[in-house]
Structures are given as structure tokens and as C-alpha cells.
Image 1 (cartoon, rainbow, N blue to C red):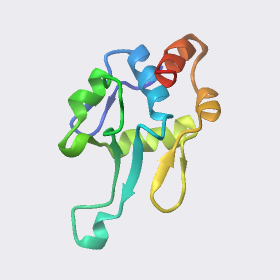
Image 2: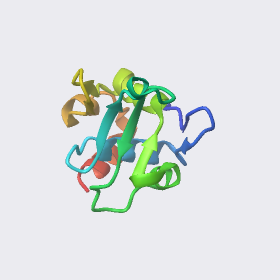
Image 3: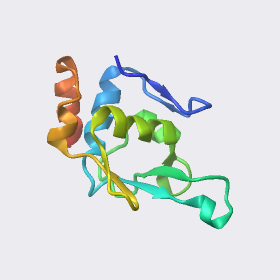
Image 4: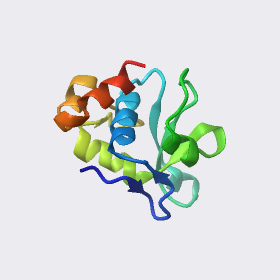
Amino acid sequence: MAKLVWGKDGQLSFANQEEYYYSLGLLCKSNWFHIVFEPNRLTNSWGDAFRIQCGNCPVDLPEAFQNASRSQQRINNNEYVENLHVNHNFEYDGTKYIRGNYKEVRKTVPEEYLEDFDAGYNQ
């Protein structure tokens, strides 16, 4: 089972496994979502961060994303983004972006949640 609550303060919280895998499918649509690395330490800010930017999504965001979104429709959650890379085959391009290839990410989805994953991707 996938972990449902992410971040030090649990700011990204999925209601159930179905929402988790649906959201994972959505994130594979790089024309809707951008997962970016911001090297904030270079500007003497708090620290480096990965952010999920949801501004281009033409469908309603899952409730977990809506609740976690901050300014400019961004989700700040390094723990969750690390999970995408380590557990779901999202690839970091080495400079700025993390992207999930549908076929590669789908290999990480338990069979009982493939329909939810595909529903997210096929929105």
C-alpha cells in the first residue's frame, strides 16, 4: 500500500489508495503538471525545493492537490517528489525537471489500482 500522508506537517494527504494512484496518473501529463527543482540555497533562501506546479491542468485537481496547493497553484513537498522518483520511476533531467513516462510509471502501480492510474492519465 502506498503511503497517503506526505510532508512534515502532513500537508499532502490522499483520502485513499484510489486518489493516490489517480493523482499519480495525472502527474504523468507533463503538459499539465510541471515538477521543478528550485535551487533556493543559491539565493540564500531556506533550502532547495521540488515543487509541483498545477497551473496548466484543465480538469479539477484531486482534493489532496487542492488542499496542498499554495501560491501560484504550487505544491511544495520534497518528500512526495522524492517518492515519485524512487518508487514510481519519475526521472530527473539533472537540471530542473522531474517527469513521469506513462509506461514506466505504470509498471510501479499495483494491479488493483491500474484503473485509477489510467483514469488519471486519460483525463
